[in-house]
Image (tube, rainbow, N blue to C red; front, side, top):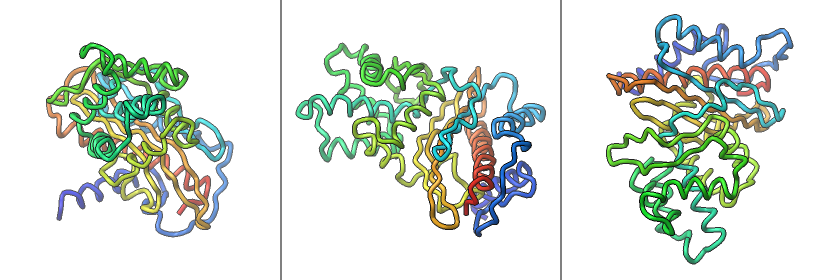
Length: 305
């Protein structure tokens, strides 16, 4: 049995333990189920799940989590847990760097072109999470500043053009060749506001960033518990301190109607994880399981497939 297949089976078992009576695979149309006022809110369900993981020791006391879910259909925030607390951004900062470049491009297309070379670099940065490509864009956005000030210039550009979105964002360093980037920060609320603007096309060229985020790659949002017909636009972030994913899911009901919502999940450890690979995989599975819980809630609410 392949490792990928074992991973899917493990995730499915976790999901069935979390969701009593829920449909894991979403392979058929289910009767519409009214989500009654008496049913625990989604935020309560997510918080209860995390607390269960804490009681079992899976998420120890030196780890903090943040969760944010926004339902575009109702225009309501369904989950807001530690949403405004800044966390290490890791590679989740990369769509923000792309947006800073597009702000530059909008004001000076000659100096900041969007040609084939730039497209390939941006794809490498977002789809492939290439660190050298990210530093390339930091240097281009901050070219009018000394080298050590260029990351801060990326932050300044973002806040100059869209300060209401990037309220807790702090960009102070390049991504080292080791990938150990610990000082750049953002909050789940920043990601949520950015994804909201992306969905509603309220930032210049943000549809291009969405296209890169929608390219096929491994994520922590969608797995065997979520219908493969659900489109995902996302960006992961991982260090020895942080595991996260942020994105938009576009689910369908039995009639093909679309129901988009955001999902942001972040787990940050105070100290460096001694077993980085194992810690990353397990915390990634926690995020997948919470995403499965959220999808089941949305499935029952909207009769999703």
